[in-house]
Length: 141
Image (cartoon, rainbow, N blue to C red; front, side):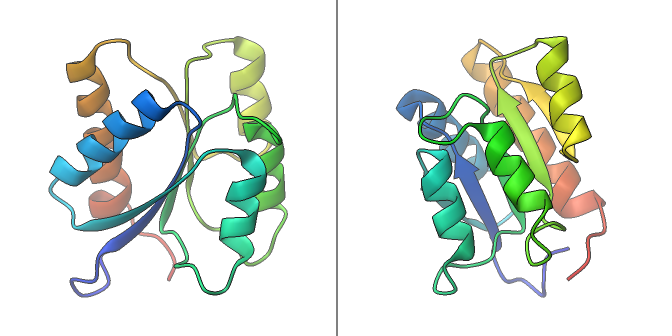
């Protein structure tokens, strides 16, 4: 996936500053060179994605419990937009409710992960996801 040593573009949609900080730290410490953009609500996420001046993400980490527009609504917009629908969307949330899991897969989420509570586990999960989606998986350009 890594376009000739260009950094991978990651969009993190997370309203909790602590979780955002942990995710950015995990992604920064990972093996893959990346640029991380962080937005704090669903409306800001859609604005970011539709702004031609922003880099197009190679991967999106999306929380479900967001202000202004929740994660399911954001996911629906992304997956219904021909310009955005191929971007892998990783749901990263505290919810382990079956209805949330089913609803996000119905909306074509690429992966659903419940946030681990511990710091070390959180870092490990983020780095594993990053490695899988950006080193192993082949994605369209």
